[in-house]
Length: 118
Image (tube, rainbow, N blue to C red; front, side, top):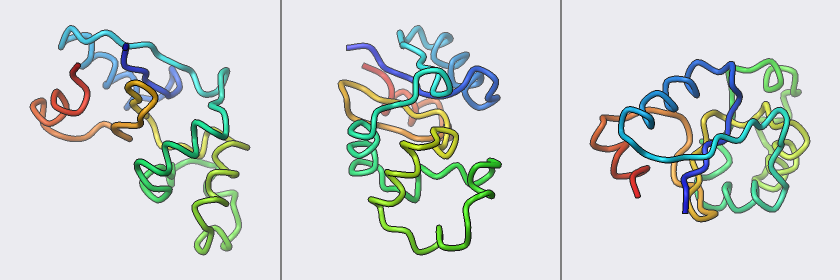
C-alpha cells in the first residue's frame, strides 16, 4: 500500500518531505488536510499510535487561539479538537496501511528510510 502524507501544500516542512520522498523514489499519496480533513476515527487511531502531544501543531494560530485549558486536555479532547480543526495537527503526518508511522519530518536519511520506506 502506498504511503499517505497528510499536510498542506503551502507548508515548507511538507514540501521538504515530498521532495525527499521523490529523491528516494518512494511513492506516496499527498492528502491536503485543508480540503480533505481526516475523519475523527482516523485521528483517534493516529493518537493511539503516536500520542496527542506529538501531534500538536504548537506553532500555528489555531493552537494559540485555544484557551489555557488546552494544557490539561485529555487525549479524547485533543482528538475532538484535531477533528474540528485539522490545522491543529502537526505536519506532515505519514500513514502506511492505515497506521500512523511518523509525525513531522526530522531525522537522518537512514532513519527516515527505515520509517517511511516500504
